[in-house]
Image (cartoon, helix red, strand yellow):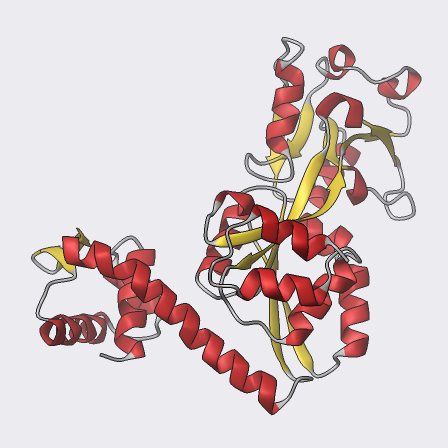
Length: 320
């Protein structure tokens, strides 16, 4: 049994038993992947996958029991590599931050610049995607820190720490009638809206805000990020509903922002880590640059403890 075989099993499971996709992810051939699995099954004396011909349909009972242990082994293998790096050189390495466009574009620049000044030899990668993709990258060990508003707190394998709170705003052209009176749901519901895709940047709270008043939003267009939404507001397609921090009066000339926090409530963005993983010191330093409440020493204890359960550890991580 070797790590390559275990990694192969994990990729097949993560790619919904599609051997072609798993082989592509591992940069190998489908036949090579199948050989690795056969050799492991022969060594163990049990089948891991249910098959129909050459297709994999799912896990056997033995496979179901093995996969959680396999995941822990892969996390620990990554920990060993990171510990070795930590002792070789605490100023070099790579840190991957998985996040959404809004966070990368409007929230993280100050933290990134401060981090780069302190750790110029660390390669920093911002990996952007949907909240579910962010969670997946963390769970597979493809990112060390995840930042998003949705999804991350829903996974038991992740430690999710509150990062900051924010609210929505409406965005309109300079001469729009909504600028003439206080904004309410009744008036907003009369206009075509442009906002985020489902599952992005508090979209659920927007719909809940309308439903509380018995209204249905007329969403004529949705997009993944705030910049696209503002572009089409400027084209006259509708009223934008975006995260308030995504509006910059110096850049967004020709548009005005109207506060909508009283309509849609407060959203909380979280910072998440895979429980039980070892991270280099500079990863926790990045968290400190993001929020002064995230103390590196307490955060390390909360993340790397094998028994991390959530609530109490989150509280300890944020107390100075």
